[in-house]
Amino acid sequence: MRIIIKIFILSLLISLYSCREDDIIYIPEKVNVATPEYTSINGFYLLNEGNMGMNKCTLDYYDYAKGEYTRNIYGNANPSIPKELGDVGNDIAIYGSKMYAVINTSNKVEVMNAVDATRIGQIDIPNCRYIKFHKGFAYITSYAGPVDINNEHKQIGYVAKVDTATLEIVDKCLVGYQPDGIEIVDNRIYVANSGGYLVPNYENTISVIDINSFTEIKKVEIALNLSILAADTNGYLWIASRGDYKDVNSRLYCYDVRKERIEKNFDIAVSNMALDGDSLYIIGNQWNETTQSTTTNYAIVDITKKEIVSTNFISDGTEASIIRPYGIIINPITKDILLSDAKSYVTPGILYCFDKKGVRKWNVRTGDIPAHFVFLGNNKNN
Image (cartoon, rainbow, N blue to C red; front, side, top):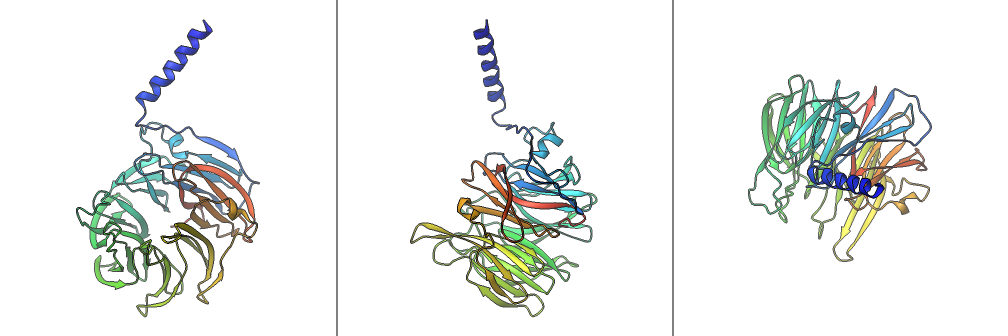
């Protein structure tokens, strides 16, 4: 009898898996990872990208007051959504009471209640990439077409302007090929054009958009294959170039938006970066075609002095355990450094929390390819 029951249960599990192999279900898990902290920041969300084509984008949440990390907060908050968040989470931000998750190859921006991640709706944008906000509008970069690594369509990208009250697209502005990072400074929108589908003829410009007329007023040449941007409060735009992965290395550029010129560039690889006060934290993975190896750095740039002041902000040797540093953000109150490790890109990653001196405080398992953060509370990233 027990054997029959076991066979029945096994058959049931196989049946359930067969029916749901395309609708991957993630069970929420809570783990206590740290001592509770009480500040005006309640917690943070971590958007796990998930490997492309696997529909494994998930959302985790860390509660500072409980010291508790919850995996797949979205699935728990929205059990009726069959495919959950979708395919490849590329950016996340909070504006007002809403949270926006940019889901790249699912061609949408998922809009949620910022407090509990319950779904409000979605904005349909093809191959969407990054998002910024200004005076009631969201500005979202789009490749404007499907994933096209074979460069068949040569589709020019655009920035979509979305009314955050209605979630309706009210305008579009054409920019360059495969636009990625976006920043807003002094009523101008700056867009990093990558040309990622034009290999080996990458783009090398940023588009400058007048925010009032919502028209592109110029393109400025910077470097090959631009990716992410960070605007400081001194009138400088920090721009990451990926290079061509072969002869031209990744570099960091400092662009003066008022004088409209490159102020300085740094021979340092930039895969991701996070700005906090006068410090720009950088993680970089530089592939060398000759040696067939990757060099990793964990640097800090003093943006006032415009100097690299550290080439390793981790001080306790934990970097030896990190395989592929991927996402980074700095807690603006405690100055803790949150750094994710994507590992193999197809298995769960690890999130590390370091104190301001670079000493590990805790770490926890995440979803696949942990990448993008947003704080919830009085100091959230709007």
